[in-house]
Length: 66
Image (cartoon, rainbow, N blue to C red; front, side):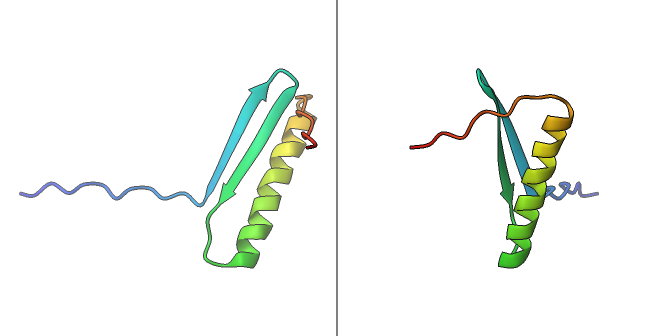
């Protein structure tokens, strides 16, 4: 009898929400082989996270201008 290792789960999307003194920062990573698809999914994911934060009255950190 041989035991098999389960296959690793590979995700195509990653989101990081960082809490700062001035609000949250959202970072999105999307993996795809098609450039148009990855751009569209990255912006959709970011905008959905931003809208969800706003709907829940969570302050967004201001964008740093350099």
